Structure formats: C-alpha cells, structure tokens
Length: 347
Image 1 (cartoon, rainbow, N blue to C red):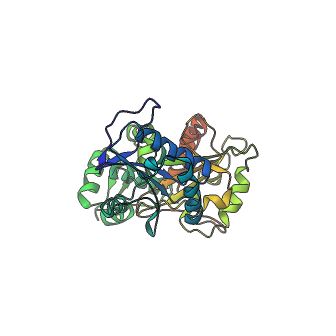
Image 2: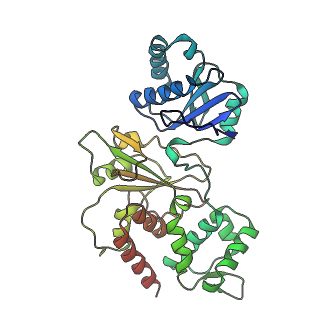
C-alpha cells in the first residue's frame, strides 16, 4: 500500500492513502447517513481537482446495512454529475470480507484491503499492534501489582505474543528492577519510574483508545451504559476506567463517574465495535480531544487479556489498563492516587 503524499486541497482534506490511481478514504464504525454523505462529498471534492484519479470510500463495520447503503447510493447518483459517479466506488469492510456496494472495485485492491486489515478512521488505528516492549512492561507491572509471583520466559512470550529475543531484550532494559530466581523465573521487585513515565507519555501507542460522545443532548450516564454492556453477551470486553479503579481502590477520591471505560481484547487486530449501537444508538465517534467523551473503548492487542473475573456481569480490566484509562480521561490526580495505592499494596 502506498501512502498518499498529495497535498491537501483548498478544503484542507486529503484521503487516507493511494493505491495506484485510486485514492482511498476509510471510515470506521460509521452510523449515520449524514456522516456517510459528508465523507463521500469530501472525496468527490478532492477528485474534482484531478481528472485522472478514482476514489474509493471504505466503511469499516458500519452500523448501516448494505441494503440501506445501496438505496442511498441511488439518491447520490441523481445528485452528482454522472462523470463523477463513474469515478467513485463504495465498499463495506466486515469480518466476512470486502462487500462492494457500488462502482468498480478491482480485485487487487480488495485483496490488499483485506491483507492490511485497514482501520484508518480519524487518526486512531487500534489495529496497529503496540510495541512489544511496551506490552511486556505492562504485563510485568500487572503481575506485580496483583502479586501473582514470578513467571517464566515462555509464559511471558505467550501472554504478550512475542518472541524469546524480544522478551530477553526487554528484560535487559529493565534489569535494575528485575528479580531473578535460581529456576530462571523472574518478576519485578520495584517500580520502574522512568519506563512508566515513557509509557504514560506515549500511552496511545501502548493503549490505543476510541472515544464516543452522545450529541443528542440527552446522553445516557455511565451506569446506564454499563448495564447495557453487561447484557451484550460479549466475552472480549471488560470494565475499566473510574468504575474499575473504585473496585481495586474503594477509597479513590473521585465524585461521580464521568464516563464509561471498556477494554476490548483484540489480539488478532479485529476491533469488533458492533456492540456500541446496543449501548446507545446516538453514540458517535469523536476525535477532538477537547470534546467530552461519554464512552471510551481501550483496544488491548496482546494475546492474553488478563481480565479479572467478577462474580457476575463483565470482568474487570487489569489494574494497569485501568490506570491508563484514568490518564486518558485526564484524571491525573486520581491516577497518581491509584498508582500510589497499587505500589504500596505490593509492600
């Protein structure tokens, strides 16, 4: 796949990437015709500045059916110039594959989209695997906080999904806080402050997050969303953020629950977000960091979730994922309090 290096148009827009003479725009979890039309028109505006290129709009797991999209396309054909319509293609990407809706989708491009498992919507790419060194540190911290005891190289390799050389390199980097045992097992013996600060500063790399807001003016509260999430029947979702932090640290100094944080275990890179519509159909993906989110989905890419079972309902996200959720919500004071609690609890 070749990244599009073309300059943005006078509208300040540039498609996600180029494949041959096709400019590709990808939108994930799209659920309204308004957003669909806006994305298609943006692409059409861009193509109007160049007479040679074609345009492809790919909708990743949209919450609009294929039949409804085909009906909408028929209306678009009446509104746009026929020459522009002939240059546009619409396709849907679901776990079952690429589904052409309208236009001409070349087999080579369809195959490349499947191979790349593309999800480029709005600058957040949950399908991009985090650095293994980050994932290794997060697992080590989690096992230490929960007092799980020493582990082996093989166990850590399976939990993260990485090779022996990667584990060995990460352990050498952390050697000042690694305790080794005669049987070759190891564990943390202290808190790696510098490495943790690096993780927090680059947490979007280690802990990618998708944010959703309800712009209807009557958003559901976090407790209502959680009740609906608990009925989803999904086994790859856990409770994180403020609610999980209170589970691990009941005395956490925080009033109210500003949003619902959920951790989605996605080791194969498929972030199945279909359950969100069941939480609240009005939820809409947002990328402006200044906009208050109602729901945050943290995508966990390691092989083992390390979720903590609850007596009923959804499990808890691990303490480290929960802590990173507090940082993402800009609850720095509460994150520091929770971190201090976790470190002191190890003794």
